Length: 221
Ligand code: 6GU
Image (cartoon, helix red, strand yellow):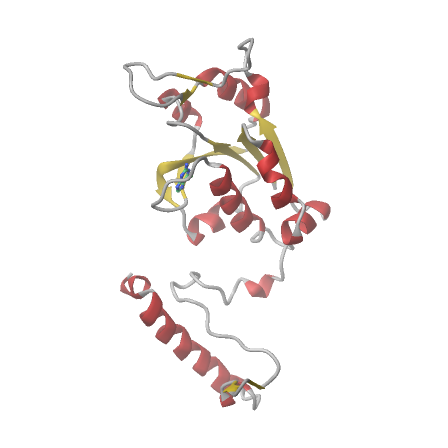
């Protein structure tokens, strides 16, 4: 998989791409990530990427030219273009699975008052990561890229996906590691005696209990 990210703040991605699982996925060539500063595509003498809104109002609007020219350069017939914007579809694990099957993703990060409306004509999917406002799409694009990259075959152990929060609209069961007693707090007995059927049943019950307590909205679906 190839992921291209369009941003005017490329430095924000340096740590994200050079740590932990994402770093390893890139080193193993399971995914290729390229950051494009679309300011480099601006034909304005001062490399301007934004201007004031027609009709008046506050803030600046990202203009068409740099983004259209950048897309003209990097887009292929396999590209799937995602715009990160607070008014997009709310992101979910089910979308992460769908996007993880694409050959080529282009993630577009916005800023200021938003994108010139005509930029949306380039886009296959508009995504928001939740109902709150960020200063820009960069953190959102990292959230989306991270959740997709870990689903690419080979990036993490395949069976780790099977028991994961949100796969079946249930939260994960609680887990414990050594020691069996810590400051008087005991690991549930059922996990210690190796009866795998009992353990599976216990974990399922815990998933339902935890989801009822913390995320009743998931059970209603
Ligand atoms: Cl994708 N962008 C911005 N600026 N704010 C957000 C968002 C995206 N998703 C939630 N809040």
